[in-house]
Image 1 (tube, rainbow, N blue to C red):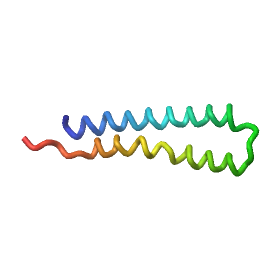
Image 2: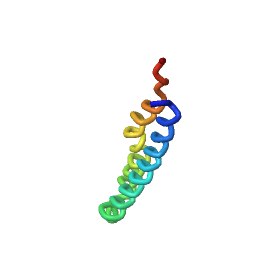
Image 3: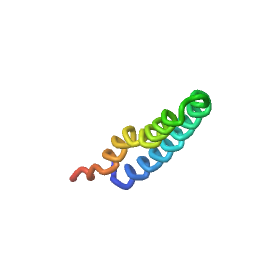
Length: 70
């Protein structure tokens, strides 16, 4: 697969990942975190805000692979 196609597919996958991750994080925050301590909520928001990076790393590394030489 050419690198341009991988970058297009990877970009769309990253956009979908970010949107789904944000919606799930917001839903969890609204349902489970309404009655907790502010410090625990802050930790949750930091983890939820940075947590999408781990699933995104394989997508980015796949996008960056060079084209196979003919």
